[in-house]
Length: 297
Ligand code: GDP
Image: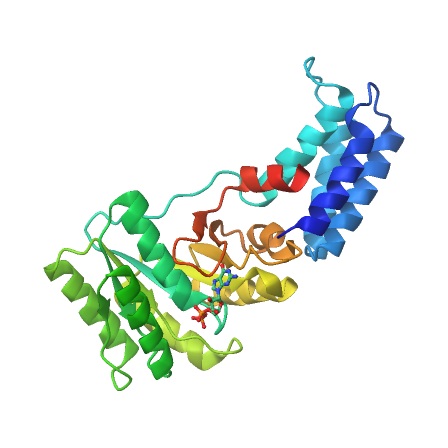
């Protein structure tokens, strides 16, 4: 399960301080040292950890007194609030365009889970929000990717728009939006091409699609198992495309959690959804507060 190591370490650190009727500056220092080590070990970005620890120390040492809590509990409350804030505070909702359809562009490296997440997101929009999405296959370089999306469409009994591998992705996306308008689909979810690494050709293509279809959301799909790499990938996609949000996949694996805890701080873009398994109903809205509670026990 995700965050196990981090959760174990933070929880045992916290146990030492919970019951304390008095918390000295030395106690806070010891606790923050442990928290710092646990976060670094979980592969959280170094600078993110440094800033977080500084804020926790400032708040925990000069802390506001709440009568219902012991000083130890207050310190923990500070840690929890800061972890929540680090992951983005509130859960942010998916956009709804003034004029349908709302266009969502899915981007990411190959293998991150982009195509699967496209299907999962469509499923979630239909189930939870009563929407009628149209899926669009824009990865013209890999016939297998088009086939994969079509198979997902069949599983979901949901239409998939594709024009094969000969058409231009901008044309495909543009025609898909026209079709969605005619057939009253209120969401268009575009599965774009992925590569093994970030490269200029891919970015040029994605920027061209963006400029032409003016998506309401651009979601980067990243694999949380790749830790610090996921953060670097998010940084470069965000520089090139000005993302609106991130979807973290494979949080059901034994990820150390670093990506979940660093991405918002590094890119300033919220994590909107989390992939919790391979099945089509295993996508959840990402709630920073719930995640912080899970980590801190
Ligand atoms: P793409 O190349 O980015 O389109 O990636 P795919 O959608 O083909 O996914 C790559 C692999 O990751 C597939 O085997 C998916 O089933 C798997 N996958 C995607 N999301 C998740 C997730 O949240 N959890 C788990 N365990 N596997 C996932």
